[in-house]
Amino acid sequence: MHRPAVLFVCLGNICRSPMAEGAFRQAAALAGLDVHIDSAGTGGWHKGDPPDRRAIAEAARHGVDISGLRARQLSPGDFHSFDYILVMDHDNLADARSVAPQGAAVMPRLLLDLVPGREGAAVADPYYGGEEHFEDTWHDVSRAATALVVRLGGGLQPRG
Ligand code: 4NP
Image (tube, rainbow, N blue to C red; front, top):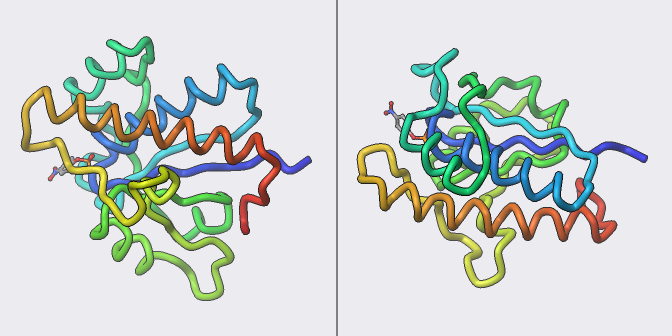
């Protein structure tokens, strides 16, 4: 069976998308789901950097170690390598769409479109906020992670 591949995308790849990656790694592992997981930023300023220390701390509070992740920038090739490209907000959506090669089979989608009642909503950028904003981020990405596990485990086609 095809091993699904999921890419989480935000702006810097140091706050929201590494937290989403960590939450989904944990949820997928608990569900015994065999899936390839990565994250990237639409911007390249933080390339090679670890996640923000507040993101690392919030994930750690939930038993997830994201300290080993390193930021990278979204590339056109990602549209060939991943079945899902899940972005955090509407700017990410526009920026990711502009990176998509012509004829790409996969189009970026808002992460919270996976969460019933949150369709069309953004995962707010916590970068300029306080610790409590990182709690909100974890809440959002972990709910989406659970929904995604159910979706992938439910036999739905990832490209559908
Ligand atoms: P992220 O947060 O997109 O969730 O990783 C940000 C990280 C860095 C910056 C903005 C947002 N920045 O402007 O450097």
